[in-house]
Amino acid sequence: MILWHNPRCSKSRETLQLLQDNGHNPDIRLYLKDAPSADEINAVRVALNLPLVQMTRSKDAAFKEAGLANVSEAELLQAMADNSALIERPILINGDKAAIGRPPEAVLAIV
Image (spheres, helix red, strand yellow):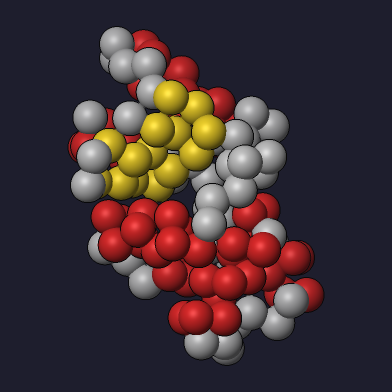
């Protein structure tokens, strides 16, 4: 298991604690420092089975300032690869499954 984690985010910290409380110790990827590539983001999108926009922090100022509301999937994917802060957090990846930890308990479905 790999957790795309931002330790400054309360939901990310809650998700990690929930996993640990349930006996799971995922590998931690500090995705803001170790940004995933466009291919990695797309692979997680496939595992989530969600539209790419649902993997973004679309309410954040950076999303709005970049004018990403009406761009193509390819443009949005590239924007996320260029600025990993646009990626929703946290995301747990377990094999070919993934879950966004909002709410944190959502990740328990794939462990």
